[in-house]
Length: 125
Image (tube, rainbow, N blue to C red; front, side, top):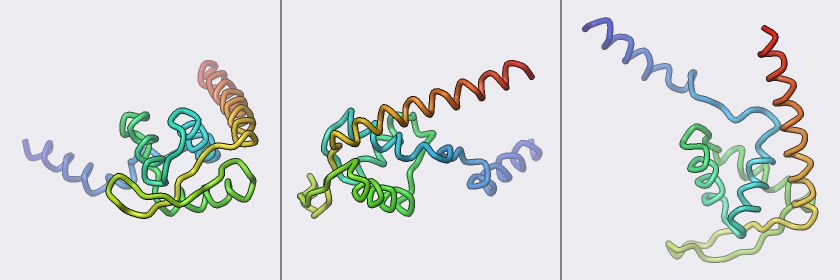
C-alpha cells in the first residue's frame, strides 16, 4: 500500500513533466479548425473548444494562444472585433477569413502527411 501511495505522490509531483503537450506546428491548425467549426469565438472559447474536443488531453495556455492569434491576424487568416461575452466582459472575437479557410486546408494536409510518415516509421519498428 505504501508503494502505491508513493507512486501516486510521484505522479502528482511530476504532473507537469508528464502532461501531454500540443505537438509543435499544430496550434494554428487547432485554432483554425475551432473557428471553422464554431464560428466567431473569443480567445477563452477557442482554448475551451480545443480542450473539450480533445477530451481534456490538449490545453492551450494563454501565453501561446494570444501570440498565435496575433500572428494569424497579421497573416490575414482571422479578423477580430471587440464584443461582450456572456459574462458581460469585453473580449476580442475572432472569425476565420477566406485566407484562413485556405490555410486550414494546407495545415490539415501537412498534418496528415506528417502523421502518415510517423505511422509508417512506427509500423516498421
